[in-house]
Length: 281
Image 1 (spheres, rainbow, N blue to C red):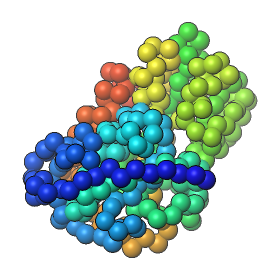
Image 2: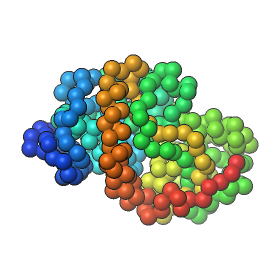
Image 3: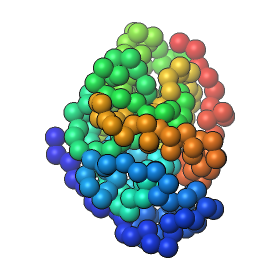
Image 4: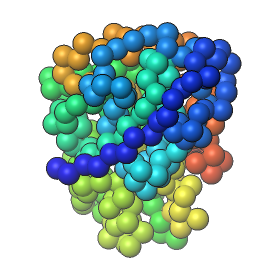
């Protein structure tokens, strides 16, 4: 698998020690910094930088078509604030396929952030971070050809390789005509082209893609999920405890909630997760 990367960071300098939200230094994109910088330390996978595996596209989470162009987003700014609290002045993004992330096939990184659901099989090959969200399965359709709670059971349905939705659809919607796509972009392109009638993935991703579709797509429903969303570490990483503490601290001090409202709500086009009807399978 080929990946590319770009260093997104310059000196923290004067921003170290800032205790209130402040506009991030150049290289941290448009993110705000919360809390105090340099309060924790790790030995990063690559010296002098915080290396993050991601899976694009991820509207609202990593805003940009390539890792080179990402300057904002909930998960991006979460990574920035982890790096800030670690005293690391560079954040490096490396794009990878989702199935390679959950299979533990990537090397030389500190954390992977890609709206990853925690499952027991995945725990055998990767270690999970402290959860930072609770997911649901969203359903998107073309706005002029909506799918219903009943018709989805036999419709042409797309989802992404490596996600828990593949097995979920096979078990709970066995009569649906399932297509599995390598990445989110290909899946939503197939939906727009009429190759599938609906797509299913994490509700946050669905809301972001629909919000960015200029009215061509619609969110029609969601299925409840009992899965937490967490980051992934390389199996046996010695830095898990320190990064987990930072994530827990950001949950406790309101940083994660603020990032969600700042970056996800606008990307969702005004439609909040609670507004999406819950479907039964």
